[in-house]
Length: 301
Ligand SMILES: N[C@@H](CCC(=O)N[C@@H](CS)C(=O)NCC(=O)O)C(=O)O
Image (cartoon, rainbow, N blue to C red; front, top):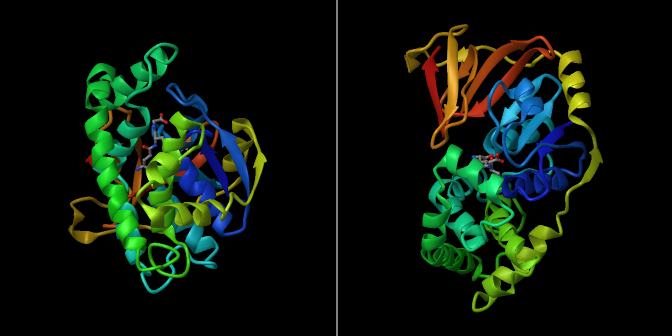
């Protein structure tokens, strides 16, 4: 059974909740803190503290890109990469990362007050350089940029297709939907201000939301740690010969754009799609921590 480490308000968590729903799965739902420290997550990841993290036994998938691949491999149907777009879903989903996500966060949160959220803002400033005052000042601009992105989504859907890639929903739909879903944080779930003048978005939002979350079962972090301890990781060495690294070498894996601690371990996989390290911890034994190649910085330890 897959376990999802997340928190209810996490937009990237919503992407994976829907992916688990699309696959029709029962899954373990482990709630992790919204801000650092996240010690019971770090036992599994070795330092990665972003949300969500997907777990299957002693295999830990950091970042939605790695998690989506793991889900697709374990449960190929219905596919998260339906034809005719197929693998193109990955590229379209990637568009929802980086700058576009920053616009979406600005649109959803830029106008939120400091009061009552001091610890949250301090965490995000320390880790991501999000200075609340500057962020608030930029909020109208960020919201306008996000509006431009929504106009492109609406135009893509304007030929009457049900989903971004055609008749069936896939990774790209979930990746873009979560950006919209998150806007409801400020409005109690009401997205009418975003669909006004964008007639194709409203129906698409309803269709993607209807995918649902499958069957989550509450689970605590200690049970997740025990499941990792009881399992062996599933990984085959595959380090690209021209990468400058070798299998078994000690490396550090960190994320672009954060001050979060790197995860340390023995390199097992390094391709242009995937990074996998093996690491040992007294509480979990040996676990494999998987990352997508995009967004990670790999250094010799
Ligand atoms: N590229 C990552 C992005 C994950 C991300 O930015 N997650 C946000 C929450 S939705 C986060 O980690 N925020 C800081 C935190 O939760 O501590 C992915 O696809 O999973």
